[in-house]
Image 1: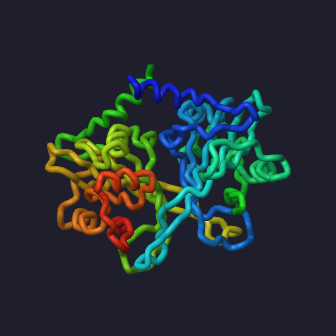
Image 2: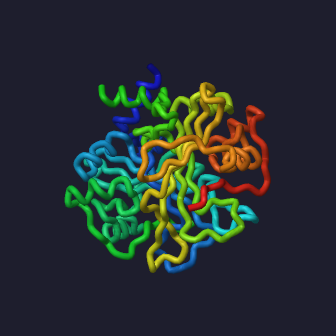
Image 3: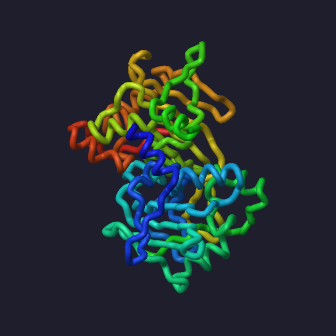
Length: 180
Length: 180
């Protein structure tokens, strides 16, 4: 019964804000469906030192809608878990994941004017929206394939987006990460 | 209601075998909890060309038990989704995931004598167990931190395993992948 309740909560992805309007990192996002992971993804021209993994999760209900209709419904929550990477001496190229660096949230909420971006520090449980000047929106709008989301890097979503005519080939694009 | 049923099925992870004894890749594993992803993980001394991502999922019930007790219960199913990686010209190091290469399953089933290893080709829906001569067991037994599983590469599990005294520091180890 507990499991069923937990699932219901995940499925509906009730978005929580603090009284000050900060987005609260969902406690259970780590059990949400996983979209994909990238390593060292950046638009920067500087070489990436100590590349990070970015694991992307989405709430169950939004995923179900996307796979059916090729578009994100209101109350879509995408969480990126950014983790440091490591390797071992005997390994030449292989990298695996270690500690949390921070989290990013990309939240579609019509009650807040559409998509908002949040960067949640690993010492925090919530964050205020990133200002337009931070450049999140500009970069997503320019480079992301579907409704400001980087569907081009989520292989299980590409077909649904293309079928719905909601996919833009954006050429030479790599997912942005906030600088350290 | 459908969602609740789907979740119940996931939680119980009913393991399916064909009449010929082949393990059937669970249809819903992509919505199971995600453990971690690595890139180009290998024990081989040869440099990795075209490194693959390995996304590891586990059935919900086994994860719940592991987080509580630090050990895998009977009927644990670990699925590794191996995907090709790609990059873009403007990006110096970053890699993202593309097509499926194959799947690997590591299944603890007392009715089959404990852990078995399966490599499921992308053109197949099931696979027979890997023979001992394939080396899966030998490598896992030698290098994996917990009960022949590579918990050292699954950061959300390490604490529970250590707390239970079920974690072995195995030095310079990298997760094995079958050669192409």
